[in-house]
Length: 63
Length: 132
Image 1 (cartoon, rainbow over the protein chains, first blue to last red):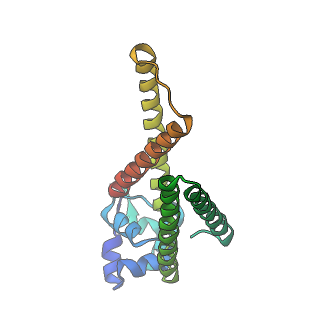
Image 2: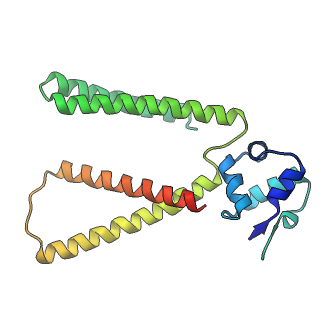
Image 3: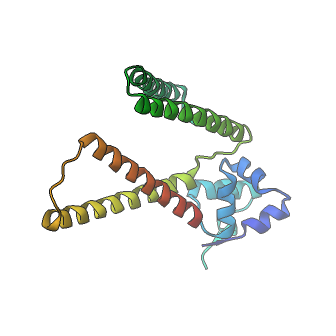
């Protein structure tokens, strides 16, 4: 699964730590998500979508 | 981060280990007593520092024990169980066929097994934390 997390985070001028704080996870989790090494739970995916005011499928997609 | 009740239980356990160490040291088993005292002090200090760091991260809204860590913990636990079972099966199989009969202090043997399990778990956790 791929995602646009890094691009979105940078366009919102957020650091990894700030984004992690907003969705209540560790900075390492954001790093893993951005590198595509970890697939988030549905709850975390919705939280991230809520931060960027997007749909989950706009951030995460199959490739 | 643990609850106050869990912290209290761990604190009591550490205090008990310290007490047993002190009792042994005063009754002539100085090396054993000193090692228990040292271990209890070290684990107490490390726990204090860890809880302090976690509280600092929590204050920023970060969760060091989030779903990724739970995921890694699950994978590491399963792999640890599989490795232990495999090792035990091999040792039992080979040992019962060709191995000599040996006498062990059961507490030493359990301590050794405990140490091996912890080492394997830490190794597998490290492996998965690098992978995810």
